[in-house]
Length: 163
Ligand code: HEC
Image 1 (spheres, protein in one colour):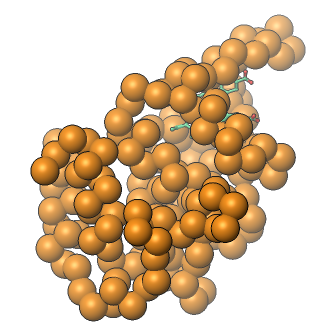
Image 2 (cartoon, rainbow, N blue to C red; image 1 turned 120 degrees about the vertical axis):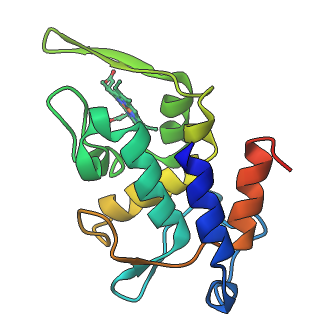
């Protein structure tokens, strides 16, 4: 599956550049009060989490929530939602799903807590959407991104139960 191909290609191209980036032990940029936060390097080069979040969002969420988190006719904009919901709420909705009724249209957010392609990258997806919502990342695929850090490769393997 292409996930593994991507992983090994980027893993092999690790360089000292990634080492210069200061990170927490788990590879996430942790704010003091725990919710992962984005950090955009310079004007164009995004950190690995945001880039990975962009990819994961567009494979698992965009078919409903629209490209770039902007929403669709049947699912809310997540760029908008993150202006009001916090990280805990975000996580809760993704893990357990949500079923609301609005304007006679039934909306269903499926529970994704069993989907490793979502759960192993949930913080990255959040960071990506956070950056979009905060207005520091424009639409479309980020042009340049930081190389995949070792810590991210390790926590990914651990999450998927690989050695
Ligand atoms: C099958 C379509 C579908 C998919 C796939 C999907 N969602 Fe949703 N999502 C919805 C719908 C519909 C709602 C609105 C539910 C409601 O209002 O009851 C929603 C609501 C949400 C909310 C709450 C928004 C708010 O305003 O409170 C969050 C957060 C969310 N989704 C995140 C995600 C993420 C992250 C992914 C991918 C990992 C994802 N969703 C994948 C359909 C989907």
